[in-house]
Image (cartoon, rainbow, N blue to C red; front, side, top):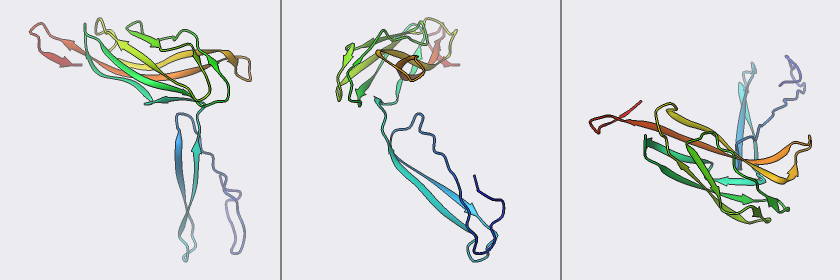
Length: 172
């Protein structure tokens, strides 16, 4: 957002920019191009750069099951790393689907420690053609500033493929 609609020659203006870090991690760089009516400087660019440190790092970012046939199952795994200075106690994972079972390797994670989170997706029918959502793992010993339960969220994705009576697969 600019501090003024017009800036006269020799004048000064401010531009305020916000970078939202949700679902981002590691090194980030964003640039903004400003266009002007100045014939000598018709546009200029400035950049924001920094490192986003997430307290509970999930890598890769998704439990990705790709394409799964009805009646079969697929397994995917991510690693959770505690990047805080506090030990966290983890509760039972809450899955976005009855067809997705989630297992966590341990219920306590000390600072700097990592563990595996394993998901098994077993679609029983074509009621849900796409699995998309978040597994919610409560952090039972920590609260947010508003008093709500802290949690780790793990994104999920998978597509369901129907098996035809002739045995040929058709993607819906």
